[in-house]
Length: 191
Length: 225
Length: 192
Image 1 (cartoon, one colour):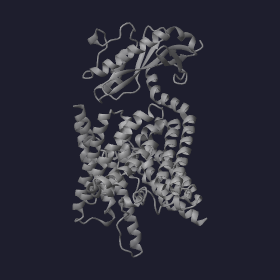
Image 2 (cartoon, rainbow over the protein chains, first blue to last red):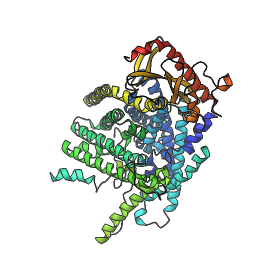
Image 3 (cartoon, helix red, strand yellow):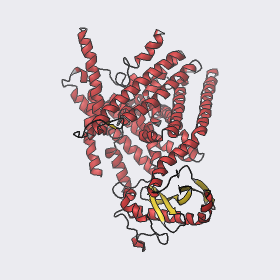
Image 4 (cartoon, rainbow over the protein chains, first blue to last red):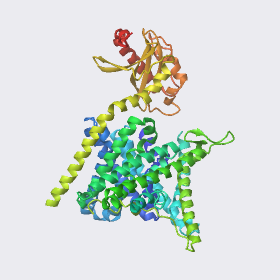
């Protein structure tokens, strides 16, 4: 039951983009077409989960026992950068079809703050390994959901007449604000 | 000298991040609930950006091209850890306020973007000017956005009551939706200003700066490329 | 091959330098950080407990070595005289550990009160630990029997938050045990 609450909270109530402000650059940047949004979202789910699990182990078995907690940031970002490289090489060699669909998004992910953010949140909340896995998958799915929904709206808006100054990023941000308002309702339900 | 001024001042208006150079959006949205927080975050970014630009420029001839991104990340991350420690020691309440966004400075596209696009190609004094200018521009933008949100959301500015008793705080402004809408409107305002200037010169109106990940420079530079 | 070696060399050089710098900065700031954390985490709880004192309990804290490990004790002084001490202990809550600062009068007959330092309890339920309604039950409470009503004591648990209430009461009793071990050393510890 607790796990269920954790997952629902991470997807809807504390949505990683719309409530926690993480991963906004790719959120605005890759939401012009829903197919691209789908690819980016899936790549984030995949990498964020892997990264959270690996950084959890690094923290637990390497940093914490040696009293090196203050090196968390630098260690995590290096682990994530290396992981992304590794995943890219692995997919290219072993699962080429998956590489074809996700490959172009992988380099974007190193600097996606959602990935590092999820890893750090798991540490700050002192999650167990199972909680970490569930939380990172759920957060990734939350990102995917928000991204795909925004992309679908933007695709439709392409046909509408919009003042030229509002076109592009400003409109996307205002849309995101309205979506965020809708997600706000979940917060009311939770309390 | 004029070159130095040019590199410094471009961050203050022409390429003002994040309003004109649309990148590093997460902290912009997250920590601008109040003007104080925006200012604090901005100062941390000035420190990291200027130092990282300086260091990257100093070692730019040493770094092999293939591992340059890895080197930039190490430099930036070390500086961020320094900021984390210093902030805990000298501004602990601010550290608690900014929370997770202090370590996340390391993935702020501005840092790696400037390292890749500017510092790794220019001498130290220009790199410092660029970092300082961009950092100050970023700070001004964050403080500006923070002031607007704080003023309408709490009726205060830097913690001092501004609005009278008649004022009903608009809580929307300090919550997540307000952050998105506010930033969107400011960007639209910036575009409108540019278009108004263009119109007076007889030019056609254009769409504002697009935020796509390519502008942040980092994404096009995958390690090993 | 040469390029490879150069890559490895440069990368390890940068990492080494960064490690060295960070260790230095860490060394230089660690004491101040500890002080700051105490002031902003333990400080407010201490202020809730001690109503009448003229010192800074965080600054004047002492560490006592006990068989089970060191314990930090925060004193309240008035005109240089010790009026009470506080000890932080942890009880098991619903969302992780609950940090409880427990204040005692110098002779140990009564509690000065309690304050919550850290907790992650459910808002509206366990998080009501921090509300005066619950906390004030401990103010001036005798140290003879501190227990929830269900266990035959007189502390009213927070409705719907039995785990949080039990955890906090357990923490208070732990603090009492520690207090009894250091009781005799207290009068001389702060110089008066």
